[in-house]
Length: 385
Image (cartoon, rainbow, N blue to C red; front, top):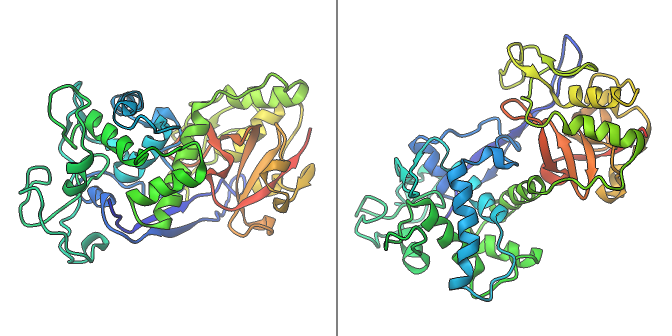
């Protein structure tokens, strides 16, 4: 359970209506070895990065999500003192380790084919591995007796699996290449001798045990926070008037595709070409981030500028220095490459409350709920209502 270097990035919204520039960046996130190396065996890396393809249950294969839920129901049998194990924790680990085995066939019984293997940990430097791990399983799980490599959707080393592997599928074999078994094994491993995973410090300690990298911990926590936010229905009981109108308009578009340059005051529309990653919105009817906010606020009779950076100049500005706790439902939420310099704002969402926002993240995703801290470069907000 170590990690290969991977590139993450983020793309902004359209910067002007027809001619545009984009603020974007790509930054390495990790430099260890392991399950990202599974990407070398055929899993597609979302090279555009950021909060790309995750954040909601819609991004997780149904059979994998079922395995995560099954694991949290069974883990108490093996670690009765464990508290706070929940499916977003397992989903956060699996998202980083194998992208939920997307691209593989997951049988009804949970077996994943083709099997997911990491690089051979022979110190060659491939995938960032610099330490030799001698073989411990004779190739039983990792398919080779010449050394060790991480296996399955949770990327266990065979030696680790030997200690935590459990049969959750009922076939009397604890198989790290089985979704149910692997998810339960991960839950048992993260629970330790009985952690309270509702406590952030203990959750961090559990993830650090899984992979001894602070960058890895931050990455996984980001995904856990996103899945946690997506799993909650927004509480709008105290939201009224135009604020409610804006939020309900934005929420009504959940599931609509992201379209670079798409969206206007009347609703979703086809976009333009092309994003910094080369993604065109010309054939996609949907919204980009600022297109969604233009639409939602238009429903309340408020006309917004088309770009995220320009929208920061409307209404009462909420400085980033006040923290996200200063936000109220209906506020615009901004993200910048250089917080404090509004000209570098690359993204905008609509705050719902309780740390959630309605968000059109980037090409390849849909309008959805995300945690406000799911994206880097928090640049404060703007209150128009």
